[in-house]
Image 1: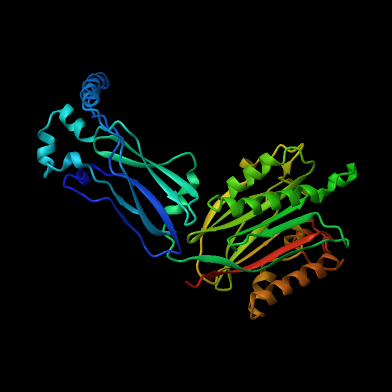
Image 2 (image 1 turned 90 degrees about the horizontal axis):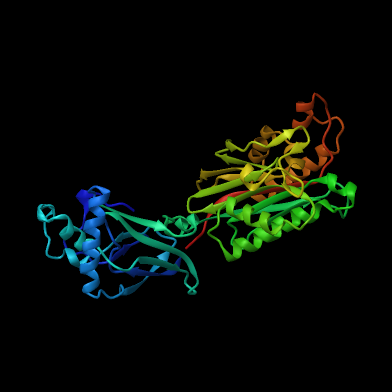
Length: 393
């Protein structure tokens, strides 16, 4: 939040939070004063004037800021106005300009930093914002320590969730190297595909992919504000002692957007009004060698692709591992959606089609087309089909 010169609050203001209607009550603690400022003179003269100002202010024995608590609803859009009692006698900007630099600085200088603490309805802190005045005419509302706290104060008059189904099927009964999850609040989806070559050295390839999905599922419960990169990065850090490697794809609803993150050839499609609206690109070093996270891999979470996608109610997302997308053409997905009447039947249709084509030596498939061959790819298959739905308030 920035306030330019023409927008300085010279008249008395009340501390205000204005918010649209939301879902859950959130407690916000609001400071009543601003933090120090420095004028725009030369650095040397600034320092001299500031030293004078600090000496004067310290003699006045300023007390720490008082705190005020306001209950609002969240998620919301916050418009914050800060009251500065020092300005109560200044009613026009012309009056302000007539003051010398020390007098101007005195109007803004405070000994104590100001913070805005965001807490959930159960009292758990979910964000910490710092109010910092970088000059006389600029005030910044900074997000302290974690950039993802921004989601707490963004507009969310529409609350969306993923409605649908997801499952994994192994190419051999009782064995599956794929893994997946759907978060408890239906806002986060993930798929992972363990790299099969680890089996040749006695390692279960599914162990690593299952760990990634299990860890991120837990993170989605305890830290619901994290975006895909932070979720993938935290899971990657925790997995350093687990043998194996895996591709990964995460979708996360925040406000009116889906945030995506992927490393490797697990992928997704966004469909709107029976047309492909967005299609992610798989990451491979060469054929049958996807980007992957894990031991002995040069790829890192930062090697992935991270994007945000505006969503509308009734948008459809199809997410899956390469065992699905290597066997199913995008056009077959669009065709299937026109032939069904529910997201459940859409999921069943795609899963059965992928299983059938993966075992058909005469099938026309994307991987066969890329390799100049015919026939399906016999592989573990994970697919999820979800429609963006609005939560009834």
